[in-house]
Length: 219
Image (tube, rainbow, N blue to C red; front, side, top):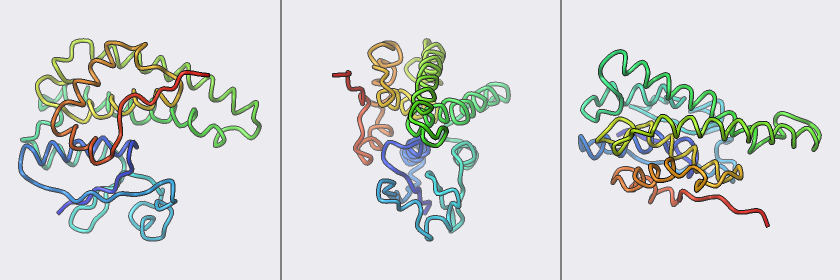
């Protein structure tokens, strides 16, 4: 059985949803393995043996670990084509992989600059600058995603949820932590709520015990 090492609300939600879709489509189950980041479990020798970067997600298949979201998504799609996690036509698939990679290597790291500015500046003033620049850029990226999903009916690729829907949900949810009210992106918020209602997504949400709206207005 495949094992997924995940942390609630982290980017591991993307393959978590993918595996729930695989389960619903093919009956192939997986074992969820909770990693408590706040307790430093990602830094234990046991976990670092699976991923030396100390990050989730990790997918373990036949005892072998696979790291990095894009690689995990590619593997799951090729192993379970009947789940229709990515488009089949070569050009559409390439475009989908481009979008997935952009969310992973551009939008995601921008949020890291907001959430952990101490990784990028030594002084409080410098951290405030890093946070402010990253927040403005992150907002622009969410608006780009809102444009992409304008024709979603009801999901990114049509009738079935996919990795893209899970990542789009995750990025909007993180926006709340960045001080971006999802209500200011109404089309995106409505789409995310449709995504949440899909049974495979709902199953992952229940296991992780997370919700969409993390935004808190300034006092």
